[in-house]
Length: 152
Image (cartoon, rainbow, N blue to C red; front, side, top):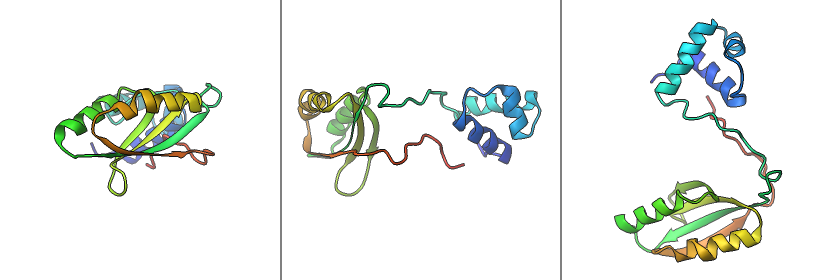
């Protein structure tokens, strides 16, 4: 789907406040309410708008531990990689998982309650996965920029 300039305005507004009323969204996007509603529905149907999540403050939700975990696998055969991925996507502590080039095969962004919860994640889960060669953790000391907004 090719995005129009109006689509980009709608999406930018929704990324800032997904609870905005259709009437206000239409006014800010410079279009009629009915045209705006149709456009939003099309963007949803085409999968451009995937969901309308609430963005939470991790600290206030009691999740004060954050880390970037570098994972290197022993082999890059299909079965161990598929098993790793299927297990990782099930874990709620893993907010992001990226397959990358460079030093590590995967980078995980982990958020949990505290260092004890993180240690349990490592000992009871990650270290028990088959095919893991190396795990390195970088603790997040301060969040400088956290964003879910795409640069439209």
